[in-house]
Length: 471
Image (cartoon, rainbow, N blue to C red; front, side, top):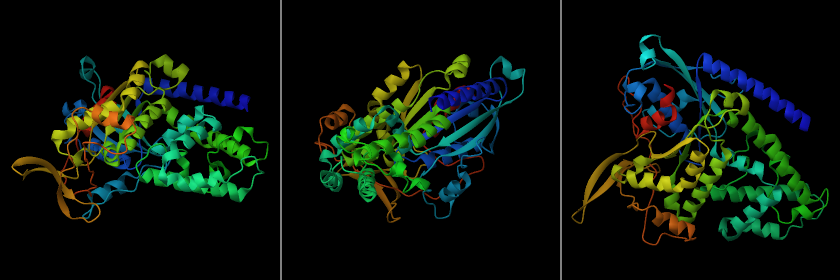
């Protein structure tokens, strides 16, 4: 196994070196990873980004577009024949239909290539013609990203962390009762193992619905063709290390290691390790709505997410010898259109505070990182309502559940994010002075002018940070 792993690593290093030389000497390739946790808007982000790269009328903060140096943009077949294509046309159709609706959420990895014909700037611009820059967008579930942290954890460590975390969570009560009746030293009984895995999966599903972000293993939530396989038929148990061979506890530990070896590690090797730009979408407003525990859980998840990256700079020799590193990481608070623009500054400050630890680590390693509030597709309009003689800054849109138009004021975000994060870190169960609500809106009907992509908030600024230096 060790020899096979070394040989595989050598082969991939040679392939990576060859790709690096090709990209440097011929047509540059930017591999942009797009991820985020549940309901953060990954599919809409990619769809709107591609549409606005093809029709750049709304990309005022993408310098190459404003300067007219992007001569053309077009879709091409992605280079990875074994990866499903991102269904751009179907998703755009859902958003631009007469009765628009949000597209289906990300459930597996997919990829799309956008090729940009760019005229160089500076002195070289007048001496040579346009060059082609390929943007390969890789879409994958955020739950899979959190799994990468498992590579450095033993079954015992993972079990201990999970059991401590769920000790006070009501939605884990059924699983706690089940493991209280379980003898980890008893001989493996497959129906019992399946019952434990099913009960733990039920807890994970409930936890995700409630806004928790520590829902690993991720394939339990999105099993695909792995459903029912031993690799995802395990659950956290205490004192499993002391169990004998062929016992329930020992088998659970073995299956956990198989999950890492056959599912998590190939994903890292084949997809994640090749990414050099990354955007992490975060539904920060949803976390605030869910309360202090969800906010603290989100802050910890952001740090765990960064631990899965290999931040740094991609110099020519380092790419050949060490492999690619993530040069730029954007943490984006999505759904900024759910609040009035006067509160966008507060939302950005909260996002910066939530990701402070993660961004500091990235910068120390040599990568650039940023936080901002964006809306990939603007679903609301803004209006000011008189309330008891004072202006109330609201947003108006079609409610997702009923389709009815409504003006909505979510509450005032604090100017000092420490007021939120302090309560969250102290273990508070509810906000003391804040009553912030989050509303779900349906996409608004679109009438797009020729040359203009879907309306957005700061998607062009996000694009400039992520790829602008390469154009």
